[in-house]
Image 1 (cartoon, rainbow, N blue to C red):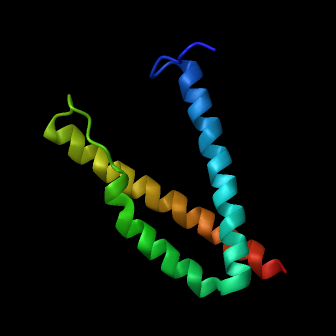
Image 2: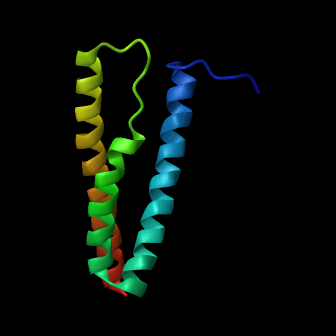
Length: 97
């Protein structure tokens, strides 16, 4: 298989598929943790992971300071919303049992 070109339609599709799979794995894992450790554990998990988000952001060499700030803000906002959404679904799923 050839290397996908960054930004190509194929690369975006593969990235979205992998992201969706990872979200499902995370949701299943968090559901199990909520069942075994309680929903309060998920609250602690979210706070700890949000604090670690800064470690995930990677500045690209060609980015201007404005671009970096904008991307860092977007990353924190979208990442936070996505994580909270997954945790909320996991909590609901764990309460069903």
